[in-house]
Image 1 (cartoon, rainbow, N blue to C red):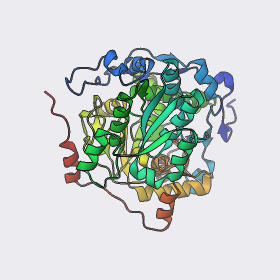
Image 2: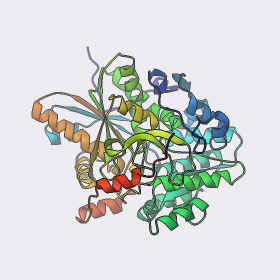
Image 3: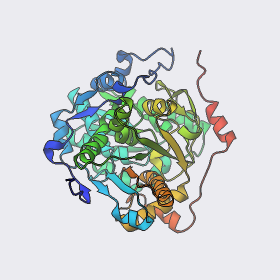
Image 4: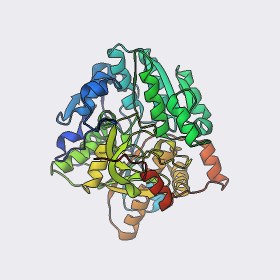
Length: 456
């Protein structure tokens, strides 16, 4: 007899994942290696160790270890807010009059308000273990900066955050949470770094981008003794830590005999999407099951759907390694849309490779339709979602409506990466009817792609 499925599924402590899952171990065709920005040779452990923590470099380069045991100190911290609930969206199903079953994994039940804390605490732990004084980082909408500020406070590390200028101005309260946890927050691009001054000269009045902020954070770490740079998305190490999301989903769904047909996540750099789909993708790569994976990105920054699969700089200042990824070009300056966490010119090399192999779909959506979906979700499910998460909500609703039209009883799983309570300026603009959609022209995209490096 099948178990009765509760409205919210929580795992017991002894059911919690004890390891992170490395999807690269099951990929027959691995992501292309990071390249030195000067020599274009594959980056070595020694070179990467000048930028990142030693243990994180090992995780970044490891393509064969399937399971990474989670250190006990990190497991103890996870217990503060994990497991996160897997929720059946009964009210949304009723509202949409759909035969589909909709589930969402809610990652906003911690003070940082998002999934970012899963990797922030791991990266802070390894920095502390290495004996570092502090770390530098970038943040878009502020979720990553907030999470890292919390993690550094816990381990008594200094934290310097370069926040994309438009988000710094749009989300002052997110900035103040970071400062409350002891971080220093600088709007990017700034005049405090050489690369920041260069970007300001080339793009006067710019609202910035994640690529700009990354460049400044990397430069700052290189000039501070006892500091390393940490990143909240894109990198292999981050997707590894975020796999705890998908691991929990899979354990909970297996416990109640639930099999998702469609798995959906918003996509900026790839951290939450990669974490959510990893264990399910692993099953598909091993030929055990088949799923439909959908990455959802903003129409204003469509790296997967309109970008090029090529080697590119991970940052605007061209100081970071080259990564083969779907990209709009390091010179692409995204519009000031309100989903700041999705305002990155490229995509994770893992997700880019999976997408290129046809193992994952991608769609882009306009922000007014995203906020319409967000408000409908909030009114029936009781959670005000982050703009980033709402991209996944929009496509989950689209798929549920398709089921209503076809009569198919599909099971849909999406990632609700965080809450939108610091995004009320954006909701205000939508409610006031002054929010606009921006879709880059072919010339806009061509200009960005002209910044791609020439590879011999």
